[in-house]
Amino acid sequence: MAAWSELRALVGVLGDLDAGVFQLAEDQPEPDQRADVYACGVLLYEVFTGKLPFGGENPMEILMKHLKEPPAAPSLYWAEIPRALEQLLLRCLSKDAADRPAHAGALLTEVERLGG
Image (cartoon, rainbow, N blue to C red; front, top):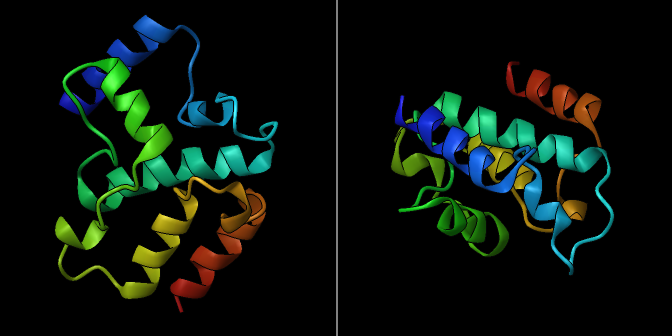
C-alpha cells in the first residue's frame, strides 16, 4: 500500500488536495469537470496497472510530475492492455484539459464502448 502512503504524505504536506491539483497551477485554466476526469484517470491508471501514474522521493517531486511530465504508458506495466484502453487512460491524464473527455458521463460512455 505504498501508493496510499505516498498520497497521504502528499495531502499532509499540501493540505486539502485531490488528484486534479495540477489544475491550480498558474498556467492552467480554472478547473472544470475535466479535473474530475483527471482524478478518475489517476484511479483507473492504478486499477489497471497496479501503480500510480507518478511517483517520487517526496511529495513535491510527485506534484511536479503531475504538472510537467507525461505518465508512463500503462503497457509498460500491463503488456496485454487493450490499445484503446491505454489511449483513454492517457487522454484522461492529459495535461491539456481540452484533450480529456469533457465530463464523467462522457468518460463513462467511452468506457462502455470499450466493453463492447
